[in-house]
Structures are given as C-alpha cells and as structure tokens.
Image 1 (cartoon, rainbow, N blue to C red):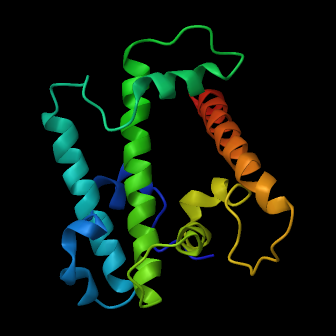
Image 2 (spheres, rainbow, N blue to C red; image 1 turned 90 degrees about the vertical axis):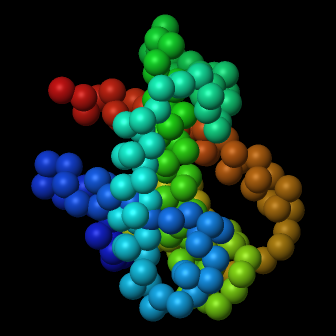
Length: 179
C-alpha cells in the first residue's frame, strides 16, 4: 500500500500544511494533469486553502455538517459524560476536511479509470492506497466482485453501524493517545 505522501511528516510539516482543489471545482484542469501525479499538488493546494479558511473564520456557528448529529455520535461513547460547545464544532470541521480529502483522492481513482462518476470502488481504492486511511480498511469493502444475495439487504445496515462504531473508536483512540 503506497502512501503517496499522505502521512504526517516531521512535527506537522508536509502536505498537511498545504492543500488541493476539490475535483468538481477544477473541471478540465484535473484532466490535463498526469494520472496520480497531480493528486499531491491538489492536496497541497487544498490544505493551504483550509489553513487560510480556518485562520479567517470568525463565525463558528455555521457548519456544513449538522452539529446535533455530531454531538449524538460523540455521546454514543459511554465514557463521554459532557461535551463542551467547541468540541462538536471542531469535530464538524475535521469531518468536513476528512470527507474533502477522501473525495479528492477518490476522484483521482475515478479519473485514472477514465470515468466521470465517482464510485464506491474509487473510495475503496483511495483508502487502500493511502496509509493515513488504514483505520478504514476493515470498514470499507475492498474492490472485489460481489455475488448478489440475501446479505445485500443486511449489508448497508451493518456498514452504517460499522461507520458509527468506527467513529467512536477514533474518538476513544484520540483520547487514549492525548498527552
């Protein structure tokens, strides 16, 4: 599994201090780049924009993701008794950035396959190729041909539960690794 430079480097330097463009905003520009080669440039540009956006943000009440839902997921951990007002806002922004980066990496998979529709297999491929997304390997199915059967009805429900439990696991792990 290659990382494509996706890991945090020496004390917080590297691509996480830069950024990249969201695929739907760059249109033709992304098609003109070499397959896979432009992803790191896009990521650097994205993270640069994210830093600038966070630095100039003054209104924290307006979020792209519902704060009540995030707070509900945070409370699903039995060890969490109270949540400060700032915590769901920070988690909302972190989730938003996570979704955007995974989308960009997935879109690169889509373009490598010469398609214009992002598919589940693209998300899975992006996760498999990026070390920082290793925690999702057990949650997101691999790109294997699937035989259709009765489990197709149960699978979406269990996958949804797995994502919720995975988010709770991330919260617990962050709490355990905090100094």
